[in-house]
Length: 249
Image (tube, rainbow, N blue to C red; front, top):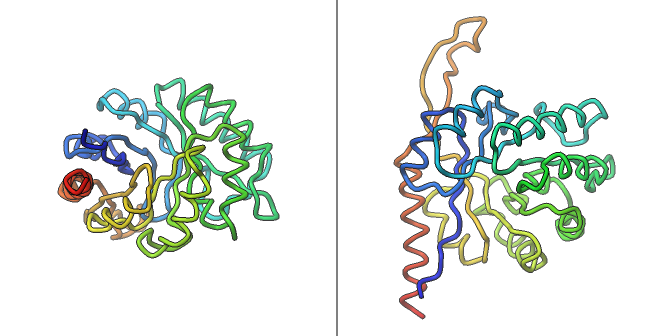
């Protein structure tokens, strides 16, 4: 029997990008806003509803109220709890969250509230994990809180450069929690990442669109959207790795 390929998750920011990503082979979507400018923020309720209605795969919603660090005030946690509940009500298959305390560990009180608000949907802990010195104690805490998976680049700007820490993360997770490699991933990174034993590969697969918003709309920076050719290349790369592994077996 040919082993299943690791899940291909694509980060998307609009309805057309979501539809294109699924058509090109995405297994799962992470929905966010302002990805290129901020690393991703909570998308609007209207966008979430439209994407859930438009695609047949699971939509996982990034819940992050602002750019910057992951130590949140009580009111910011409350906003995230409300956003998680709203995402669940809108049909999201899961949510992507993260919160740290002032000492650099997991904010267990905030995470427990977010997991509870998810009401049984899958919870992914995002790349806040890449800011901690050692992922292993964090993995233990997250597994105990009921978090389903972590998204990590292995602490590097690009997952392809964080393979040592990714390997440590996979080994320590030991099946208790899924490990998804993400962060600057390109299609040709698939083979080395899969070789580490990750459960999923995550990428934005985006292209830039020019568009001048003028002085009140961000100037000429334009925006990013999904590039289906990159999604298809990632899909093919993952499938080829699995096929070649089965042939060697």
